[in-house]
Length: 81
Image (cartoon, rainbow, N blue to C red):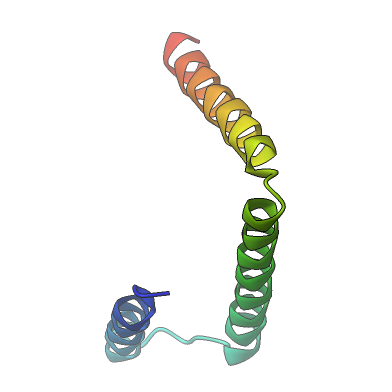
């Protein structure tokens, strides 16, 4: 949440640069993406708070361990093959 002003500022500068370059941006998909990412982000924060309050954050740790292992495996497979 603390990084929100910085991220919004960077997005604003990127939009201004895009407009200066003459790039046409449809606002409806952008708005839909913003709304979707906000809702998913809030749901993730709520889920993480619930996991911590109910002392079930060990499940989150297992999830992140499995996701990290899968990411490393995919990266290695990309380099090897």
